[in-house]
Length: 165
Length: 220
Image (cartoon, rainbow over all chains, first blue to last red; front, top):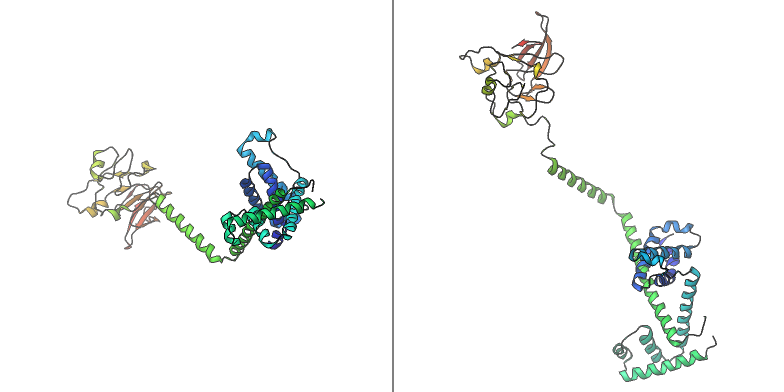
């Protein structure tokens, strides 16, 4: 498996790998470390990946085993106390898909907002900018920022309630 | 979707997607760096490896020299004549290790031991393996003779089938673990005495002079 093929095949699975590691470890930073470790291991054995039949399951199992190793290093009793959340690949991919669907839905709703409101909502609730940063970026006073955000949120809620899901 | 999400769920999902996008970008950069490093390693010229290997070997050799330099020299040790000028000494008596004569003849650094044969400039730390095979018989030496001629009066016994040799006119000897050799570089030659029809051992020095020894009990 060459460089570009590796990137196009493995990197899209990062979301599922990260989600599985977070569920098992309960820690975002540790999950990131595990996923990065798995990526390095996959890169080192990329020549053998062409023979793997189900690459998704292969990658998820690598994450699962490394999470178990990490838990075992920290607390041996955790394995016996069934404190680990074992998620199947299907559950993980379903959850990832749901997250992506919701994000896409928000994107569609935001697209219907005026530009100022869309920018304000994106900076406040997605990029998590401070009010001061929003004032500078939007060229607004703080009171105007809050007013814009309030109107945008109300519009989004109305649109969301009107959706037939 | 399983149930109808509220607006906060959408924001949460959007944040997660955005975070994952940044993580994927970081992983992509990491893979690019690994690929670049691998390519660079493959293109590294051979002389880099050669120079590194040569440096390591040089350091290793230098380290060995420092660590074991004192004991890694020749087992025979340096020739004592190079360290100390040879003084003509006289082997003028039957020497036994415990005799008073041996103590008088032997230089101070040449500590006698039991059954040792006293040979001038021999290394004292190494014992003679076959001391009984070499005997130095006494012969009265007139005091008027020069020391050079006194040396020729000694009688040695040399085993014919061993390289043990001794030469009185060759003042520098080295005593090794298995044999006595002339420290001046003179080489022994085995000859046959035409008159007595007995084997002889001769030392021939660099100048071409030779001294014959009769195998068994040889006078020279």
